[in-house]
Image (tube, rainbow, N blue to C red; front, side, top):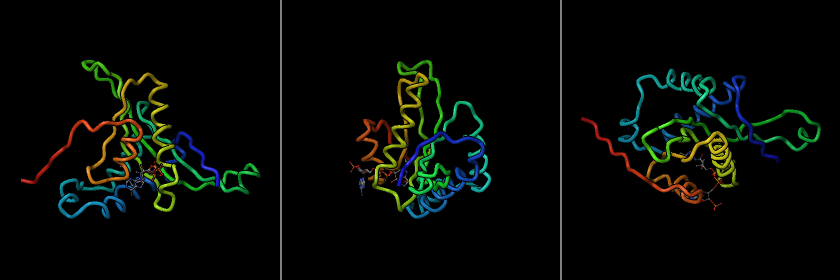
Length: 171
Ligand SMILES: CC(C)(COP(=O)(O)OP(=O)(O)OC[C@H]1O[C@@H](n2cnc3c(N)ncnc32)[C@H](O)[C@@H]1OP(=O)(O)O)[C@@H](O)C(=O)NCCC(=O)NCCS
């Protein structure tokens, strides 16, 4: 199997939305306990996910990279028979008062369960980092939750340091 990484465009709306749904509905529901789910729940997740994909694919400061498998036979024939393996999304932001002022921010990062642990996630993070560097960013930022051991380990391997721990409680 060949893994190909490419920048998504508006024609990829359904694919990006499908990955968004996997991450924010299936994965988060399985990874979060009831208390954490409640603290992060949206009133209308369906609408939020759809408008988020619109923004990611239309906003010039946003980026989406897709990892796709290209079947060996299809690749040999030059066909485009692909399957989405994962994605990474984000945006850039300028914070003039900071010494490291042009920030690349990872928003969503996901590899489908059957393809985890084979380097796809690392490739996606490298791609997003290269993109941000190429457009002049001098710092990268990403977010995960403290007990997401795999994501924390990968961030550390890629040179990220934790800078804050966000706490929340219902009132
Ligand atoms: C996080 C995620 C994108 C990483 O993608 P991946 O394809 O599994 O990652 P890779 O195969 O490139 O890298 C695996 C690395 O994760 C770490 N890792 C793997 N399994 C681990 C485990 N059980 N515990 C801790 N670390 C682990 C290792 O550092 C490994 O690096 P290595 O090759 O040196 O061993 C993927 O696991 C995923 O989609 N998780 C669910 C969604 C998620 O958590 N997203 C991140 C939110 S910020």
